View 1 (cartoon, helix red, strand yellow):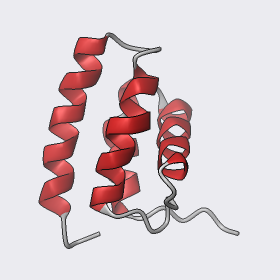
View 2 (spheres, one colour; view 1 turned 90 degrees about the horizontal axis):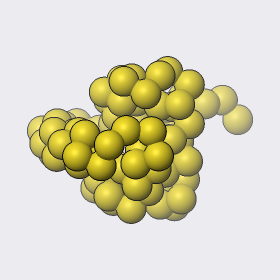
View 3 (cartoon, one colour; view 1 turned 90 degrees about the vertical axis):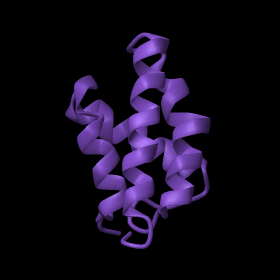
Length: 86
């Protein structure tokens, strides 16, 4: 199986680059998969759930809770603006 993430996945990884390329991909991929979705077909709503339930809690190990929560709010707004175009 070839790893071909969609635009929703790529948007989060790109925006999460402040923790490093490899870590941003790993945290996002693991969060999406824990949510029961695939990086190549994750929807905006699935990604928002992954952010809330898995990705942002994982970020707390690498950045302050304040920074992680601020990033989450901005990212959710970006994702919602993509809705329908995933």
